Image (cartoon, rainbow, N blue to C red; front, top):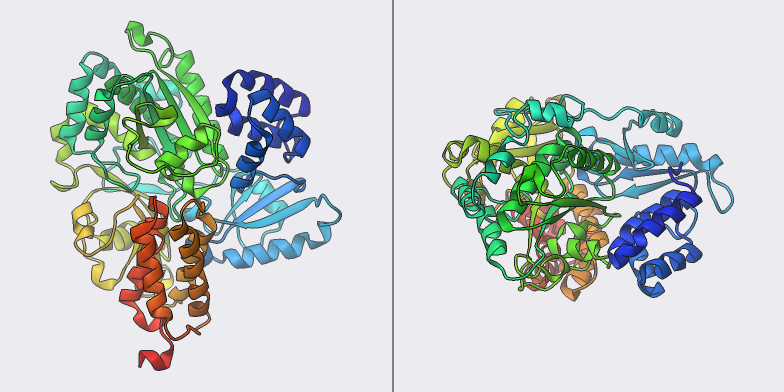
Length: 575
């Protein structure tokens, strides 16, 4: 079901050739769309056109899970196997599809291929399936043909909350186009920004107290100020839309429903730091958001909101979109830069930091989707009014992705500081099937577990920090008292073992050892000394890994060991 043809690939490759190595990912995607896979001959053709050694072309292809060097069949299905989808029966869905398609698989080029996948960013539609990279909500009773047909209808995400500022135009199951965005105060904040100095814009962002919503929670205004003051040109603004944290889907909803809010945030950031070029890096599994954002950029260009001398000012700005190809590590900012530059997505050592040595070695501001969507809101409201939301140390609204054993999974916008209980019992309408609450994984695979004693803890950076739980990107996966949590622990360990890029030994080897131990824990047969080994491996990764993936690969399991030590020890040893 390729959308391109070999002849269109030739044309695309010719247009990409002048961009050199940085066009490697777009060229590989174009080849796979045209031929269904990337043959040795096509890889060589791409290498010659872009001036990239063939060995390095193969190195990039092998790095990403969504690229194929062999024919994979006419229909390709990915079934998510991370915790939220596992709770909804993803394993059964996978087995059913494999059983259904067994007779269709023959020869070297099977008609249908199905693979297990890490989180697809569809946790509210669990068990989630991608068919030809398009989303479908699955059930064990469906055939694969019905799943293919289901991709014609976009799954509907439930959007609600105590406030509807970032999501005012979301949840209506349509994409806001430029005209409607303009009718709802769209681009007014950018017009307002052009009338002020860049320094004044940065000061407003600093006064608002906005911190990054991607998980690191670094003050946005300070980041912008550092990049603005950094010597060197050109400067870049990068939108990190590679949300691949199991349980996360908020950026997908923002991109699909209100893409111009993200573009407006990028425009304001670019004006503030003096950038003339921006990139949006979207995870490979998000084909639909990629198409929506591409259309929005084209719409903004045609409307005069991107390009040369915007609105008659001296400010010019253009945006390119890059689609990832299946690598969790590329959500790490420096690995993302490497990917845009046409390399394997390995993280860089820091310092130097991106604000001085970022994309192409130039000063760069990188913010995630939700952070950028906050920027126009802050300028429209004013910093003081914005700070009235949330808590003094955690101002503003926050998007939470609620999934798992709740009656109404969805995307909820609340002021920072509301209790966890409110999100689960009021907005999520309580526990599914009436089973008692057992735990919630907050912050995704890199997060930590909350127990019933944490239900009244405020969901703010400082509130959660006091009980040793990171807010992260605002991901909450709920487990009822009927669940064997060892299955979730095992899936988290497997996730990191599969996603470690292997650049540093603590992460490369530690995630494998952690997985081996968790396999024994899952079977209820931990060896004597496994408790100590798991602690040693976990803290070694935390202290010695070079990037956030390895540094947080053990955080959820270490927190689980505190709450449920009996699950990790042999019964006799525990007694």
